[in-house]
Length: 231
Image (cartoon, rainbow, N blue to C red; front, side, top):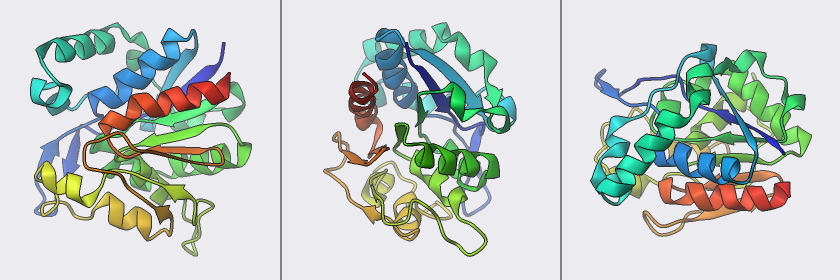
């Protein structure tokens, strides 16, 4: 049995460039699909957030038009309700990476509010990359890589091949012109070797022990790839 650390946003809103606090959090599918993949294979999941706060699900992510139908929404709600780990998050600063076999970051707009500049998360990401253990980030979660920059702006993730939520997809959900900055732009500028697939379709990239997925549809496939490499 492996131990998987899920590092999740603690934010319940995303501040837009006009100052409006848009209700947000983590995207349901990006938690439920990997959680089901890992726990279904018999592995143990622990959740860490900034300050150990209980992560908040973006309610928009449970609407049938985003889940694929009413049945899918009910199923995801059930997984979230039964996942007791969500109610017992530990602070990121207290994580001992030696206790875990892999690290996974779900997305949602929440990481654009807190994880992109969270120093504890940035340190954990640098250590996870150096450890050689599988490190996965999906959708907006690669924004957390921005916190790995040092005082000179350098990051160990420089020029790694990555993907993440595209500017076109952000426009598709109506936020591209409202955001303070766009994840694709900033992750490209780290710099990374960013690539993308078709909008809304599963697209994953693996570079050494770094695993990234473009969008919610990529989260389950990304976890499946990580699972194979854990075996």
